[in-house]
Amino acid sequence: MTKIILITGATSGFGKAIALKFAKEDHNLIITGRRRELLNELTKKLIDKYNIEVLPLNFDVRKLGEVKKAIESLPEKWTHIDVLVNNAGLAVGLNSIHEGVVDDWERMIDTNIKGLLYMTRFVAPLMVKRKQGHIINIGSVAGKEVYAKGNVYCGSKFAVDAITKGTRIDLLPYNIKVTHIAPGASDTEFSVVRFKGDQEMADNVYKGYKPLDPSDVAEAIYYVTTLPEHVNINDLVIMPTAQASTMHFHKIL
Image 1: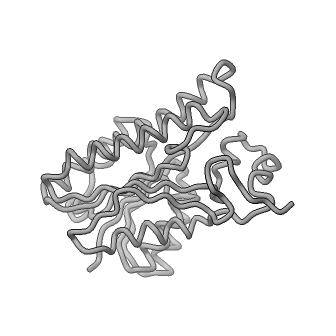
Image 2 (image 1 turned 180 degrees about the vertical axis):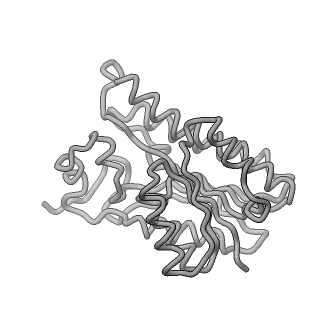
């Protein structure tokens, strides 16, 4: 059965890989992102390669008014969202708490927590109305264990874990599945953004071992959507074989 999958932050990393995976499996997509050019490029690729229907929405999940307008303006055929993947997220900076950059803190909190909440607030009622749907929140192993200088980023991802659990309880009467996915080290734009464009520092993060590829996480996300109606994966932690915790790696340099 063809489903409608809504993916935030779809222009790169996990989001793009998730879009490609669901398109390959013949599902129709609503993809969102702030970078219009990349969003349009992905839309064309998905349609040309997989012959599916794609609705691109160019807005910022951090802005409540933009989220509200985008979801409330959906054409009727696109309101039957089967899966919401709250993927948009980032880490910015790596500082001790007493040296933290407040603007970095706000970007992480606004994207990782408030953006996820805004999207859920406007998409979940559509699922409640139909008593059907699946919400997948992309967290991190940093939402399971805190590491030095990860203070606010870790806090935001712990919040994602807690919000996911609360959402599952609240939506239990409506037959809606809620899943938390917590990836470990992954070769995406994550480190480039964290180090504010310093490619050399970003590359050093992944030296000496094989990190997860975005497609690895996309495969897991697709899998949890294929289970029988009575089965839900509540929480799934995914790490490279070379990683045992947030700070323990086996590197061959």
